[in-house]
Amino acid sequence: MVVTFWGWKSGGYNASSVTDNQGNTYTLVTGIAANRARAAYAYASNVTSSGTFTITINNSGSSGNYLIECATSFTGVVTSSPADASGSAEADSDTTVDANVTASGANSQSDELVVAVMTFDHSSANDHITTPTTGYSELVIENDGSTFVAGEAAYKVVSAAETSSATWTHDNANGEPWGAMIVTFKAAAASDFFGKRRMQ
Image (cartoon, rainbow, N blue to C red; front, top):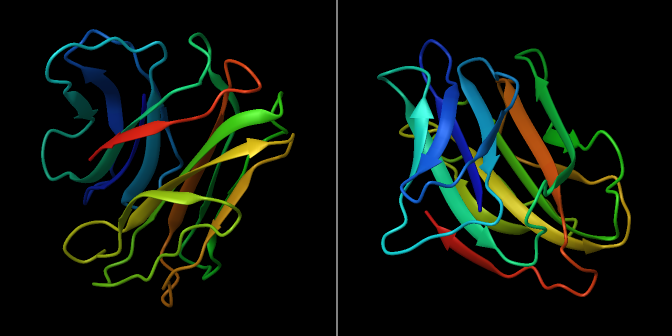
């Protein structure tokens, strides 16, 4: 189970933990603050469930949090210590470059799942965020940075060793800060298919 999300809070957003009502244990990784916004992801391996499955993001701040979140169940991932290569990046308000992030190194095996997430602190009603073009598929997107908080999460499956990266184009004419994260997950076997089921 991979939970991708981003949030905004006037004093700066952050999350403290991710839990569910099934007793699964999540590893939470939060990105670098993009002024008042922040991207994050959490994951749990070998997930068990019965009945209604509810995931809770526990915010560091008790009120005033704006959140966009998506939970996706992937099959074909190893059931223990699944995370492999990862990276985070941010840009301050002095830049207008597109949001981009690169893992700190190459994935350790050829067949891996790659998940990337970004957000930025931009008060536009339509930020025209694009899905990264290098084979990614969208998991969730929010273009309204005025009513909500803008950002996108996407994934892809690779079949060769690479140093994974993602780049988003978007409207950021005033140079507001952005933050982005990327992580790869190891396949249980080289022939495994990464199926998915999304909850949003």
